[in-house]
Length: 114
Length: 110
Image (cartoon, rainbow over all chains, first blue to last red; front, side, top):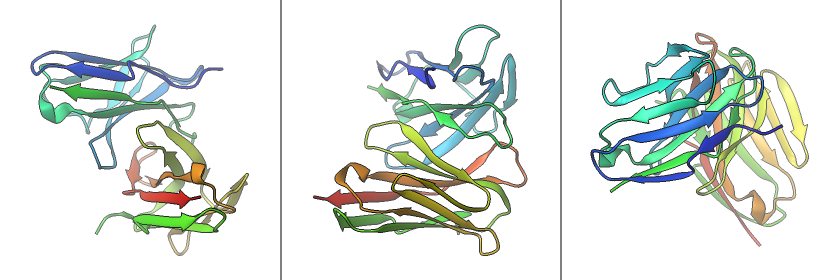
């Protein structure tokens, strides 16, 4: 029973390129959350998705960032035209029950923008 | 003032010492999480609690809802316990959003 799987673990992009981060939740989990952790800072909520629906994207920058969780396949966090300030660790978490369920985190994807 | 405050920010101790990390919050909550993050590593959920006390191995977490305070204890600490410990609360206003503490960086010296 695999945990939350994120890939790639490390991604290097040049300014202006696109970054795609993938997250496969734990088996049976339909709630996915993305968080960003800037260097030396705590986690910040970005977006909460259920299958095929964005429930809350209040933490997502309005431009260049998008997220999806299709009916089939992993959740994708997409960053277009990356800038140096996007360099961070991006964590995905999932749970079975949104309100009270324990959160399970992936290992994170570390994006470095050159 | 942050809604979730952790103390201390940094803690260095000798192997074998009893460790206490504190978390105070100012909002109504439905649950409190303790998580562990190793340098450059992922995040592991240690406990989720809404009342009382939970124990897992050498880790103990307690919460006092009236005082809006939680503690994480580590007995017989070991260098492999060195990590950042994070407290996060699920606000009563939201059924999913977490308010995160800044973390406590723990170093256990052999």
